[in-house]
Image (cartoon, rainbow, N blue to C red):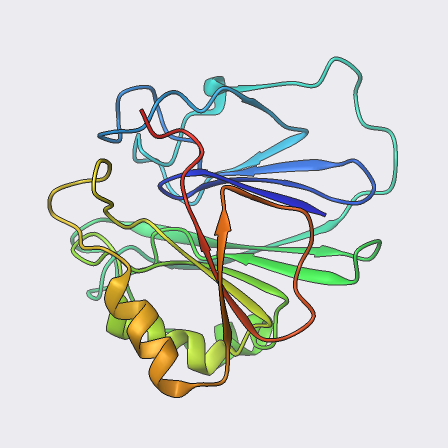
Length: 214
């Protein structure tokens, strides 16, 4: 399995079967400091219809259609805010289960609300959790940490944060999330760059950097 952090909430994941999945591609110019996504994937999954998460046209199709075994997809309805969507609407959590990789991948989208017990039961103990931490439009670092503790994934990657040269002014960085993870002391912390070739064997915080920084 290969995981690429394109930027913002956009990831490209290539399973060991060769099947590729894109999450939340952003429209050109929609995220300050990030260049166009410019990727190819077999499937595209968007958590909601805001331009920084929803641009199917920016993802190309492979030259040869995939013909192998497919992963399982499950979509969990949630909210983009803490008031049942009254501010920003709904959000979809995407769960991908790959038998070939023996892995469950969870992309939280722009989650802005607490999880119900039923929602939590579907994602607890996943192998890879992609979770927003920047606040304002989503949960913030503190809430993301609390949610990560409840989900207890093997690997967690913070997303939807502001860096020195990219991201929205309204949102924060990932630093507080990292410090909270450090304070708990049960995860290895790895500076992982933009691409990782496989999931770690131990509980890990993967600090990935956007591939498409201008």
